[in-house]
Image (cartoon, helix red, strand yellow):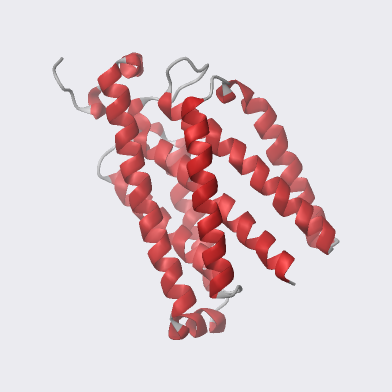
Length: 234
């Protein structure tokens, strides 16, 4: 079989064994680079006192990072032409990953280094287990997108309530539900990527979007696990 550039392939070609494997490898390679970059930035934030003091003295930086994440995510998520156009798609993804890394670092400095490391270890184990499960299970989670959407809305409502009526019990429930919801989202996005016999599959041309989706799931998992550990410590 002649090897073809992934960018030139149509969605119908996704069932081809070579295309599917090449697509999955490309997504995991991009995802790995994103996670390494984020881990590096977070490590600097929690272990370098000068960086911590700089962030603490400038709390508005977290909102700048959040704004950058939002601005760069919109074209990748909503504009098919942009996320499939090289090199603009990679530039946007790099900028988004840097902004998200800074955002996570700003959150992480509020916890002890040990708590952050525990959260990293637990997240890594959870992601590995869920990835293996998503690749091996016969259950089709891609058909459950409506249930996941409802779960996300419920999580958002609980989060808003927790902001106005904070309590330790409610925050534990909120973080636990967040971990559960994004665990299912991780399985959902992985199955969208692998395609095969699942109800829905993502186009191999959208490798940037696939990597971003899984990356966001992992980051959210980490943040909820970190928050839960922080609550349990107090």
